[in-house]
Image (tube, rainbow, N blue to C red; front, side, top):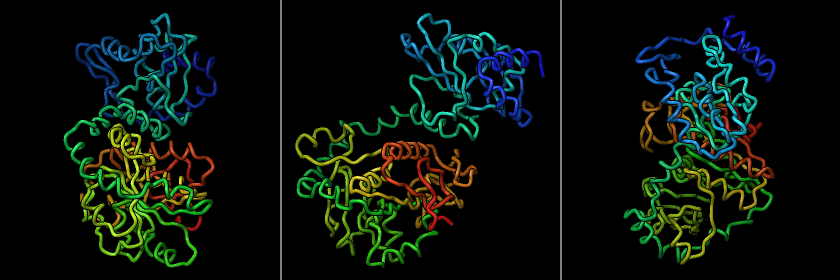
Length: 430
């Protein structure tokens, strides 16, 4: 052990003995560490600079300035080289600084090469592994390098951090004053006015089992079984998202309810032929041509988005939860219909088996496999390719599940993303 490590570790052992034991087990040898020099210098881990190589202190000052000056409690995700922690501790009004380790091996390496005692010894500091908590804490600053370097244990927290950081940018897509939004809502107003309120479905399936079907690649392993189940006289209610409708129909499976919220969904995804008896639940941003052509009963609802504020004032319709993906209102509908048990099919939030979706070609629904640069952990504990927005959708579904402890949630596959709050269905998981 280096002299730095012994002194740094001594403080950690005194203040957080259990965490010190974990740090001693971290495999620092697997990291490629290099000194990178510019006007100043920094450490590069696996090709990622932990800080600026020109002016670390100026960078820390800029990072600290993004946090409220009057905040008495602040959270820092990632340990870096200690610069941000030291800068924040200069604030007289700071009562507590929580430092969340995003990569234990990276932190153990930094402890070997740099003096971290000033912030480690400060009584206002609380040190913990990020993955020890299930949810992020506010206000926070997440060190960019360590969002990239986050280890498997911290992956869920990393995904929540990135989703939160991107929230304002994501919401810009849904500007209520955007001409295309105004035009779409004008074109669907009369349809919403004439169609049923989704609230009519609430409570209609009290205490029963519901299957919610999405379009992840793992769905392809369940077509035969879903078809057999759908042919039973007594069976679970089958709710599917819009992009899963055609693959299901092509395999002889008629869902009971289809949920659609996206303005880009067309008749290609939801052909109107043979839709008699199948309910369509939609939000007013859906394509009016698709809505109008649907032959089964139609139910309209809203999300909490400000996009629907003016229409909501004129037409009363119930709300469904939307967290960026159509899977959210589909699951919320199942809950509000009274489901006691919900089994998810094709809810992968990832690209297992080197495919993007079941029943569609690579790129047919937007993302292409070759463009995936991110990962989540699957049900086997292995990394599987995904894209950034899928991770945000996963976070929102996990939060939704956590808010409904009285409903039992099952996942039908280990091949997609691990969904916190679900159990693997003993009958359907292969």
